[in-house]
Length: 238
Image: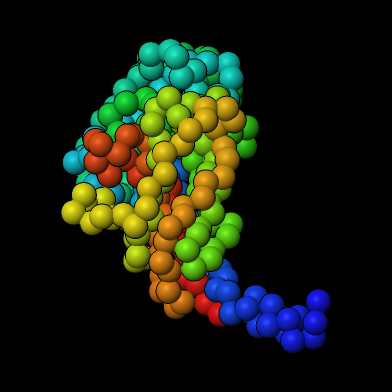
């Protein structure tokens, strides 16, 4: 390679934008106090623009001896969120026994939209150190002027393709719940196993210094954009 060509290639490389800042947003739940015959007290934190009551968010409970949601089994408890505050605490009722339970927060009125869980092993309801947590996550791993690659991490043994999970990208600091804002690009998950992987959002026209947001949705796009389970924001710089 000639010296001029080498300098030209280096200059072209240096002109490519790169990920200068990024942040992730996830949904999370936790148990307050000690579960008992009346059920449990659940605290949850969802994404800032979420309206949990309006958008049909639910908390589901399964009796289980495993820290994985039994996706094919009907829940043993189902509580609708009763407020539109995206962060709150709410009692949930179910027939608590001295057995193991997994509690999941869903961003839609279906167990297949659970995005955050806490597992309490049998006999450990008063031992928070033994509880196990998991949540859906989305992160940005590469950014170019016309391409963004993201990594999604689903809950164990979940089937994102079967449930028509998808990812979209917008300009701005927050993924819009309103369907009036058209995404720059969307990609549907095409594989169930494993429930984690990488996606390329291509054909973009990104600009340096602009903030963008990427969202992971649990319900098919035709049913709207209120099932946001995780998001990531980023800015590209030079």
